[in-house]
Length: 324
Ligand code: AMP
Image 1 (cartoon, rainbow, N blue to C red):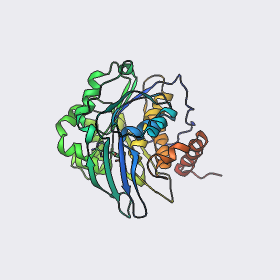
Image 2: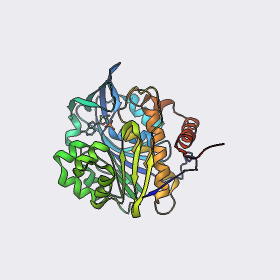
Image 3: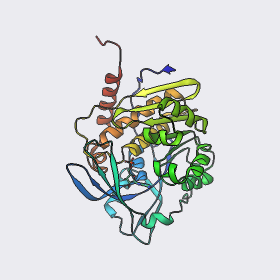
Image 4: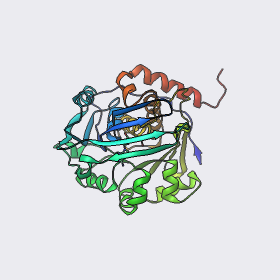
């Protein structure tokens, strides 16, 4: 393994000449319970987290569906983040609802209920102009829908997919078909083990690469992330040592959105492993902020200065040589 070391470039500032990211996924109203607090009808969903995180770096084209009950204030928040909403469908009926409960170990979560509502008949159709978006982030939705989006894109530069245990269990063939079409898969440790039936995450990463994606990121919750590239390229990114995690919901989606947004803003030619190492650190910075408050609340106040500060902390905490 080639252990990759430092990442010495600051996150880029948002810039309208950056390339765009196409993001598809769920948009939800979540009810979240932790051992200390419970909040209902919060803005959630994989696409919401991905899109808001990516918007700190790049223009975003969002594809998703909500019901007529979806609060206007959330639409205003997306607009305030500069997210293009031409691909947002507002359908007759109620918005997708998800409810989850965290245990004292916040890496452990139980889904309490799901109401698909308008999400049940979601047909992701790309708005005019979206099909040529260079970076594509397929947020966590059924792999049949992720494949359907890929059928509509033209000449994408880099395609990233997220997934979850549900799809590995009930739609594995469709997921395997998707994996042959993407450049990168992001999933967590439990999902990687489920997909490969391997205990070792190092073996699992290589096995997933053999299924199609050139790059694989395996997230380990509060313990960081492993990145696998070609020719045994490997990078282990730690997690920011947060004292207070208030709501881990959407940490993975925020990580994926920050990673994709960074790539779209920073990469001019082909995406390299060095680009991806920096992208993983940027995704980790955004995710570490997001869990500090419920829902996407922390993203409302997050500044470029905050991102820069924590990026520097990541660099300091990851450095293994003695600093004079
Ligand atoms: P994460 O914490 O990264 O697993 O993402 C949590 C978000 O995923 C919540 O905001 C949910 O609304 C959303 N979600 C939960 N289950 C599903 C599902 N089956 N399909 C799409 N999104 C989901």
